[in-house]
Image 1 (cartoon, rainbow, N blue to C red):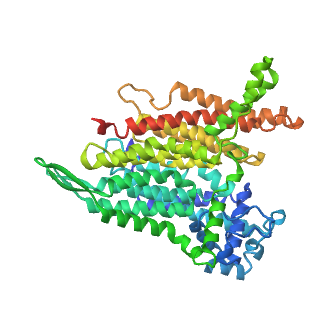
Image 2: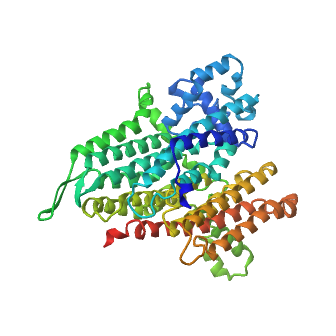
Image 3: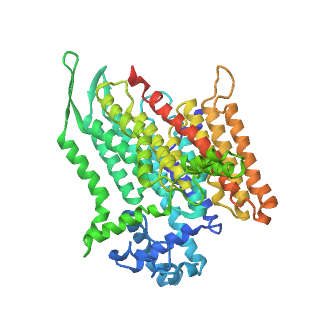
Length: 566
């Protein structure tokens, strides 16, 4: 009965927001990572210092929690630390002054629970953007105009806003991923609406409503530009937006006549409007820094903070990507070289390449460009063209698939990627989960491996039961709902999970038991193989996510745009 999954409305969205906010409020006393201290210091920087010092301050060299997000996020932090409510809380003593003081890392613990509640509340409140983006995007998917697309929008909405990755990352670990991903979903919603609004069928004649679609696409571009000014992690989506909009938005269909065919011309006016809208939204937050006494120095310092290549290829806890597999193979090869009886000549040859050299940022950037090519450049350009001359092409559906693929490419091949970046692919993929059995399987697999890779972030025994129950319960709920939607009534059988998926779940269960039970008992007391559980988690999840990456490319090319090949 799909009707129970289709009853989404603004009222139900609002009620869900308050219900989930109440649950998130109960998580305030839980573990918080150093990211809490990072954002507390950013509040202090924007509260106490002039703009010219925001990207230079490091509390006289006593903190590593320096401001390293783009300017729009810095102004977001400034809005949180400099407003009537915050001032009132400080004046009444509810919020202690220390909460917004510049403190060294050695002495930065908040002195009151009120400071913790204040910062936690800002994350809970910012999730309103996530709810808005989830609502708009799930509604827009129904406009794609293809069977299966956008079905069960309420179920899809709930999958997004209850995602355990966002709960663990934002409301326990402490970050603002929900707000940023909400902006991603809003941009996707506008782009899909633009693709859907550009043509209407009236009395079997094609009437091109280009101005309507153009406005939606401008909104999508503006939202994405603002997102880049909030978090540069999403730069991997920039080629997709650029080539898709350049080919689709900036070309105009002048006539559509059965005798004369279709005439398409490039519109400089559209390009100019698109460029102005995008640059204003992206560069606007940089203007206050350009107005300082040393604008060049300001820009150099901001770029230095945004791209700290000195941190190395991978994070301390390897994100489950290609580079984790690369380093794992290097370590295995080094072990074999050290232990195996190898002839001297061969050993000398092997020692010249083992351990593997760390790829330089320029090489990583080249690999990333190659990884983005299929969806972010090649197909984006082709689909942008096909959508103008071939009505069988479905640009809206392709665009969502391409966002997922490019996000996975950025996660797989990016430099110093954090494990949380997998959420940039999982959340958009949710919009496609109800489309078909293939997209449902891909979604389940991405969540299976991607969310499992986040579990080690909550490493305290106090959070063990919470994270395990949350992961298992949500996965069971997602699988149950998708099985109901894609149930094979003709064959009377379940169709989403395969035997391979069940084997993968069993493998992850073994890893979880080893990580949380066997290793702490058998290895931790002696200090042996301290990082083995983290390495095992990264490698196994990386293997599964590489599989998902390849499948995502396949679905993007042959699933979302296969009608365009005819």
